[in-house]
Every structure is written in structure tokens, then in C-alpha cells.
Amino acid sequence: MSDAGAGSLDFDAALLAAPRPGARRRRRVLVTGSSGMLGSDLVPVLSAAGHDVFGRPHAELDIADAKAVSRAVRELSPDVVVNCAAFTKVDDCETDARAEVVNARAVDHLADACRRHAARLVQISTDFVFDGQKAAPYREDDPTRPLSAYGRTKLAGEEAALRAPGALVVRASWLFGRAGWNFVEAILRQVEGGKTKLSVVTDQLGRPTATPDLSEAIAALLDVGAIGVYHFANRGEVSWNEFAREILWRVGRRDVAIEPTTTEALARPARRPAYSVLDTGKYERVTGRPIRSFREPLAEYLVSRAHPEA
Ligand SMILES: NC(=O)c1ccc[n+]([C@@H]2O[C@H](COP(=O)([O-])OP(=O)(O)OC[C@H]3O[C@@H](n4cnc5c(N)ncnc54)[C@H](OP(=O)(O)O)[C@@H]3O)[C@@H](O)[C@H]2O)c1
Image (cartoon, rainbow, N blue to C red; front, side, top):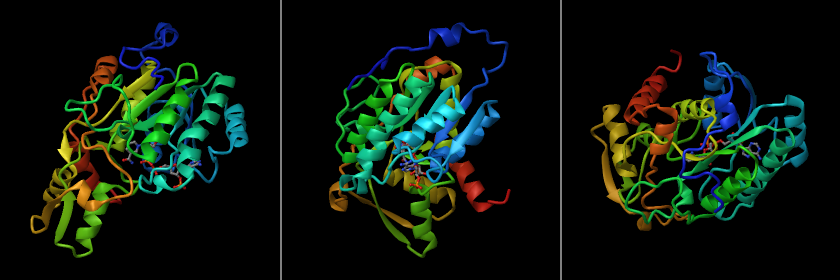
């Protein structure tokens, strides 16, 4: 892949040189896919950081529509466009043309519009660009080799984004957030539906990541003017099986048996990397921010789920 800036510490020199009177620079930020799991958390985080945020859900802005994208960027005149829109059903991507249209070609439209209107593009990407054969955490400059159509189309989206000057690609892994369907819900809903025995794979390892923490990370990267490719994930490497155990332990359901199974036995349509742990050292060095264990935002998620009104 063309990995402009990956692996080194990349800043926008002009941004860093700009006067910073003790406060963040206020920017106009367009967020696409704003009602998705990440978009729903990112919009309030960027607003709280002092930016003027224009969230556009799918129903208001279809990023596959080049004219609509161009019009939105022209009319809103954003300094930054954060693309949270994607076709994220990993197995469906194998056969559904929307994977290529939304994850790859639409990012070209966004990159074109950003280039024309001097906006910075932030593209969200995934650990699934890697093949999972490595035995140590993946760095930004490690070779990519996606195993699935989802991974291939997301990688094409990265490449499209990086053709826009000053673009930032943030790869994240195993997202969970209150606004979307995710692994935490998948486990809890089965148990709440009466299941007392679950089979969960032990042979895929990764770093679960909370969308509020990823949102703060995106804000921090914008703050320092980062460009190129960055990895962000919460701390803690686990298998899906261990993640399931952690979830059920935290909600006090020790009565549920979580049996080990394998990726091969599940025979899902899309292949997944066996090991997709992201190295987040570059993010930590550039932003100077520590990263929490996924267990902390998981605990917060479970409290907010139990008390949605609070
Ligand atoms: N979920 C994960 O575990 C994970 C892991 C690593 C990276 N990521 C990446 O993180 C980003 C955010 O993912 P997420 O988990 O928040 O996904 P999500 O909940 O599925 O949100 C994606 C949003 O994009 C919207 N969308 C789909 N097609 C669109 C189009 N043509 N135009 C505009 N909006 C469109 C969807 O709207 P509709 O639902 O109405 O179609 C949805 O609101 C994505 O780039 C994803 O690839 C996700």
C-alpha cells in the first residue's frame, strides 16, 4: 500500500507552528456516518473539545453520491472531514457490492472534495487490513495483506484517503459502543434470552476498543496535527473467548458456560486474522496520552447499559 507517513512521527508542521494560546484550535468538522456506533460518540466528543461539528447521518449524506459529498463539503466549508461511514457487516462484504462502493470508492469522492476545498480528511480503518500471521503487535508500517473483502475494501479506502494532502488514517480494532451492535451486546443478549452455554473462539486475538476512547483519540490526533497512519486500541490483548468471559464475569453471570471453539469450526464466510493486536506506541508518543485498559470503558458501558437514564 502507499503508506504516506506510516511508521514515522508525522505532524503537520504548519499546524504545530500556529499560535496555540493554551487552547485547542477550534475547527469546523464534518462527521459522516454520524449515527453509527463510532459517529454517535465522536460528535459529542468533538463538540466538547470546542469544535463546530456538523454530524451527517447516512439519511442526510450518502457518501457514495459524489455530487452530494461535493455539495456538503462546499456548503459547510469544513476544516476537517471525519469519515465514520462504512459498510461494516464483515461477512456480507464478501458478496455485497456496497462494500466496494462505500468502503473504497466513496472515500475517493471524499478525498476529491477535501482536496478541492482544502479540508483535511480523517479516514477510520481497521485491523482487518492485516493477515494475522505476525507474532507481535502490528505497527503502522507493517505490510498489509487483508484476508477478506471487508479488509480489502477498507485498505483501498485508506489508499484513497492518503491521496488527499494532510490525510489521517486511524486504524482501530474490535469496537464496542452504546450506539451500535457489537460483541458485548451479542453476548449479553444471548444470555438475557436464556442461553446458559455459549461457544466462543479462542484462536483470534485482539485489543477490544471502546468508541468513546477512540473518539477522544481522534480528537487528540487532530489536536497535534497528526497526518499519515496511526493505530489506536484500548490496552489489553484477549481472545474473543476471554472477552466474553470478562463481560459475563462483570455482570455476575458465572453460571454461563463459555466453551472454546475455533474459527474453522464456525466457518464464517469472511476469513479473519488470527492475531490482529495493534501497536499503539506511535499514538502514545505523538499525543503524549496514556491508553486505558478496555476493562475500564467496558465497566462504564455495562453501568450505562444497566442505567440508561443516568
Ligand atoms: N465495528 C468494529 O468492530 C470496527 C473495528 C475496526 C474499525 N472499524 C471502523 O470504524 C468505523 C466506524 O464503524 P462503526 O462500528 O461505527 O460502524 P457502524 O455502526 O456500522 O456505522 C457505520 C455508519 O455508516 C453508515 N453508512 C453506511 N453506508 C453509508 C453511506 N453510503 N453513506 C453514509 N453513511 C453510510 C451507516 O448507516 P446505515 O446503518 O444507515 O447504513 C452507519 O451509520 C468504520 O470505518 C469501520 O470500518 C469498525
